[in-house]
Length: 88
Image (cartoon, rainbow, N blue to C red; front, top):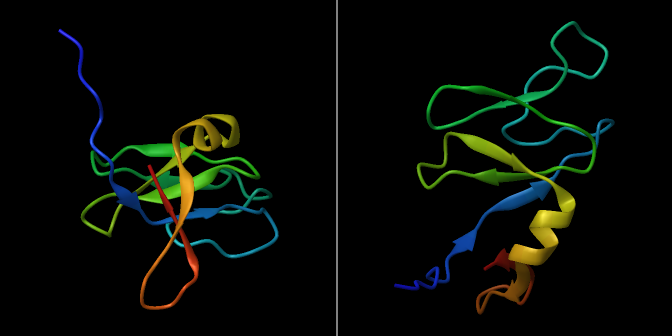
């Protein structure tokens, strides 16, 4: 059987090592480096330009490599603000 993934809107932000980013802890120059804490409680390493995606609970995050993000998500406009948001 084949299945298609349902469209879902995600809240995402691209990490830049010189700017604060929601869901990213640590710093490139400290011992651990930047990381996210996933919904499973795992620390996941983050590098410059990774996209940081909020989990459905809004409290945990996971990184996505830019090339995968671009193949998987596209910007969408929100009716209330007209600004672009990221969606599948």
